Length: 158
Image (cartoon, rainbow, N blue to C red; front, side, top):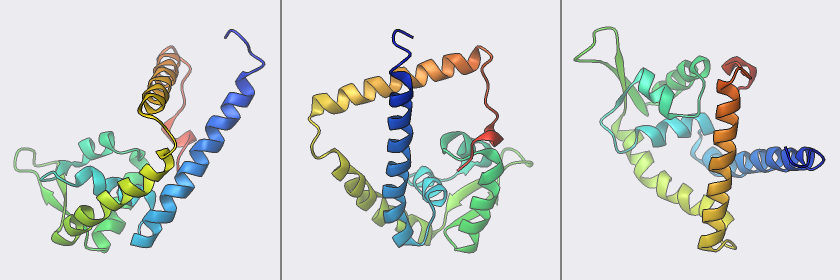
């Protein structure tokens, strides 16, 4: 690190921004009577014919231990269903019901517009720079994690 004195302030701003963003996004999703993890599953399944449980877990931002409860609650709400895989008898396919698909088609565009408001004061160049910086940071974290600096999935869960 070139200047270790700046690291704590950058980390603080990153965490504050993450928390503020989640709170902002949740304020819209809560109007749908969903949690952010539930909405994550809905938008991940949207536009698909369903996904195997394992693939759904890999594509969402939900830890494996939390995903089962999220799936159960969405099933109770009638938004998703589990069906046996035709190719693997041990696997289940998770897919949206008609109600879940209708919710996705209505709520996802609304949510993108809601989130998009955060970037109203950003130029296309600003957005590209922000994305590049976040990708660079993600690569640094992934590299450090792969080098033995590990964090168990259970140590950080939303």
